[in-house]
Length: 127
Image (cartoon, rainbow, N blue to C red; front, side, top):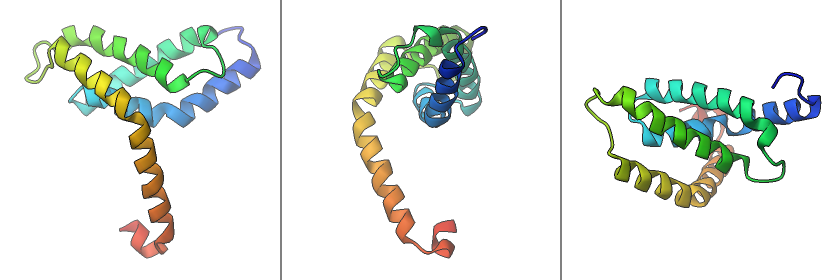
């Protein structure tokens, strides 16, 4: 984002910090190898930075980012072709769609788990 509006740059940093783990989880859902998922996250993050000027503030950054990640996963499939585990395109599409449909439920569960963990004392929480 060279010559970018400083407010947009700050917004990008804030959004990436907020959603990076979730974007990684989405990618890792589609790619069995953690290492490969980390590589794709890096590529996705670069593309997000390059295309952020096209992102409409106030819309769903996570969904927008996952679309970029999805296309990065598809592009990486050629590289994974020699791997033992490669989902065919139909399976990849079903997983991506199902993950998207489950996002609200996963957010709800994550919130409930966080609230439960806050009720534990420090010693129990560390376990």
